[in-house]
Length: 483
Image (cartoon, rainbow, N blue to C red; front, side):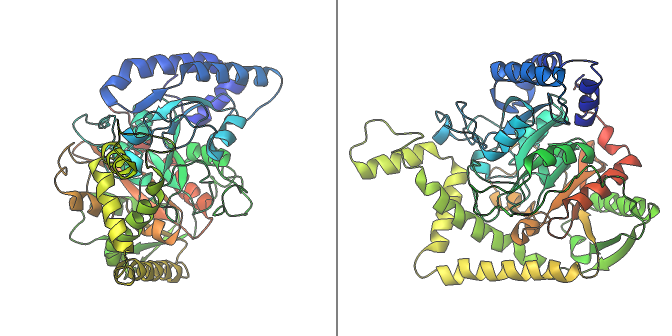
């Protein structure tokens, strides 16, 4: 059962080949057996899962149907879940139990999805390796000595190891797409505002976006269908109708214009990855796509702009964690200032502290115009590049990451090296565009992803291209040894 995709599970449940309760028990046992190797979960919710599975079976017995009814999933541990620890991978929130469900959690529960637990992540979603978690690093099931990517590495590792078919994740600068690439999954970052951020603990509010991680584009379409939609609780949510993402999966790619930016193939890209990307381009050409070289001239400025904007927003968002209302509080504070300083110093890890300090500096008097305002102007230039490109092409294609997954600890003393791994993904967040990563091959036994970008609210087109590619390739079907 653990090898079944979401789509296959939906068909199996509809055909009464197994019950949701039977499937849930199998996967919970598998998690108990295999997750100690991976550290992909922070919290397991066995009782809740079995309760939801029984309820889903009862709903099906009463004639209800639905692709997610009885399907087991997990949530990245920054989606608030009522009465369950929501830690954000941090000591600061190790004792925090959310008093309500995030909109994404509530929507998926209403659709009948079964929550198996909360997955590990970089602390407050800050990182590209899932090494900054208070609960320890997550291991990549393809090679346990390597990182699974971050910050959604727990969700990615769990799905890749067949502990469950799909999971929710979030993407601030590539945190869905990069782990997908590193673990041989399909991961989709929707258009900014497509999925509600209400109840999703914020890192950088203008960049964060929730989305699905699964093995196939078909499964991502199913999970996104349950997640997407307007939410009056979220002022950044877009009131745009949600299409049937599964309905367009089989559309022909004949005549589809795909742009390949020349800037993507610079000296920083592993030549073996470049070759796999070119192979993907050839495969899509066979399916009828038309390939055109394009330019994104301001891409080179994206990383410095992102690492001013994101920390600036983080320093503001994380100011609420002060040891007063919720979260970690230091022992025996001498006064209010001591309470603030020690609670935050003890509660936040080194990477979070680093980004808070950078952000506070960029927003401080005398530096706002020089750093934050200039970064926002660059952000606009990046967006303009994409808008110009999309007058010529329908989709933009390139590598998801410049390198395969690195060894755990390899970049521990060099945060800049880790930041540079986001070069291909952060532009979509700066511009608010939808982006998808899909499996494209292997380098030294480690998975590689190809990234697709589309105009606003064209998630269906991304899923269509990925699905057609996956019908004619088998990279996404490969399973890590031992899982």
